[in-house]
Image (cartoon, rainbow, N blue to C red; front, side, top):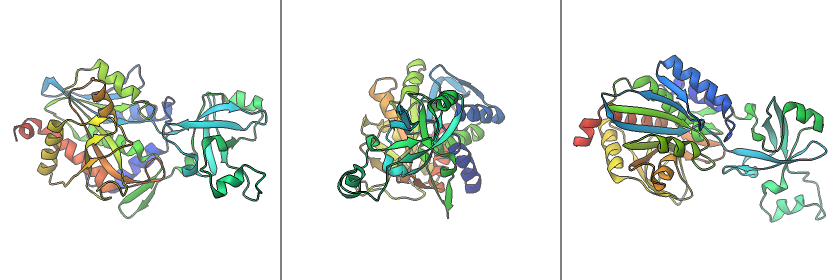
Amino acid sequence: MNNYNQLFDTIEKLVLHHSPSGFEGEIDQLLLEKLTEIGVENWQDKAGNIIAKIKGKNSEKTMAITAHKDEIGAIVKAINFDGNLQIRKLGGAFPWVYGEGVVDILGDNETISGILSFGSRHVSHESPQKAQQENKPLLWEDSWVVTKRSLKELEVAGVRVGSRVVIGKHRKKPIRIKDFIGSYTLDNKASIAILLELATQIKEPEMDVYLVASAKEEVGAIGALYFTQNHKLDALIALEICPIASEYPLEIGEKPVLLSQDGYGIYDEGLNREIINAAKKANIEIQLGVISGFGSDASIAMKFGHVCRAACLSFPTENTHGFEITHLGAIANCVNILTVLIENYELIIDN
């Protein structure tokens, strides 16, 4: 795949569909429509995963490729009498990353807007906000969402304890800088774009292939664990972002990253070798990584014994869990590597 304009447009559409963990209906509807348009068999399972199946030449072998569809955000902990909301993190979200500004509150009946707020700057030591200016990190407990709505109006909208809060949709709009894309929730909407492209390109795989847009990954890989518990798989590959940081010898750019280990354990060296061979066949350079503070559908499923072989193919990303930046070429190269792997699997494993 080398059409960066098409890839950008697909990611933008996905990003602008909210999907906080456990409240993913907006993206679910879009994915089911897209997969039906592509013409592949698809369904949603009881755990909320969206699954496409491409039948292979040998149905005795199965491979799954996952990309989680949920995003981080916040959850309503309490509603004050003035209509302000107390919120706490959902997944690995931090208030200082989002900054003061518009958030969308996903009520049961209506999505409304509010303002993530930290208080005034023009204060003395008598105000708790003064400490945040000088020596205290900003925590969720120090922030609130102003709705300017009465308790009755919030009730009518279906805003309650447990309602999800995400970055306002107009703040999510991606930006393109040369061949880079910058956006909230590239983790993991860019990986969903890879799944959709694979559903379009793969026609005659060597084995049965499941493309899984997994649910509730950010809160424990719940969807992937359900799927892998109920399907016998020979291999599982997770698509993910990969953090760029000074502690890791990785570079931002077109080269995808294949992980050997993350915070949940090691990946399967045999499957990694097959992916490396596929990359060589596709004439694509890849980077190898060992990272911490990170987990994927694949490493978590293998840790719990649901799959015997797991790998994580990722694209290097700056500002992870923030306004993320990655190269469109790295995303496209993940598509190309996996297409070669799936359509030439018997040849690759013989090498």
